[in-house]
Image 1 (spheres, rainbow, N blue to C red):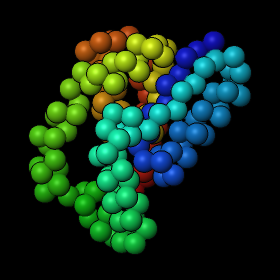
Image 2: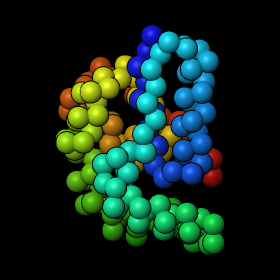
Image 3: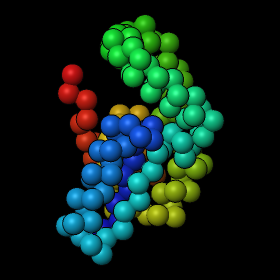
Image 4: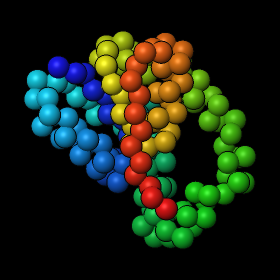
Length: 139
């Protein structure tokens, strides 16, 4: 009986759908196991998450070519590097509480940011946590 945390970003996105599919697969294999599916950004920073979700979904629906350009942009990488360092420190109080209360055996992420946050947490607090990433973007 495994305890599986499944983390994604942005509700109603492909990452969310992939997280639900992973959860369904685990329940089929281990009906007695426990799963918890979490929008990690919404959980950590609800207001920021709302802004990111609106911007992200609007951009990919209305101007997918703009999203493609931004996704691979060195400029955006440089612009967000300091912010990512703060977010990826692994000591977010909400994440610590989540991990201590649910105590997952395995964490699976269907989005790179969620994987980075949980990898930082694991390195600092749970080095034996099995951490997996699911590739969802094949471009």
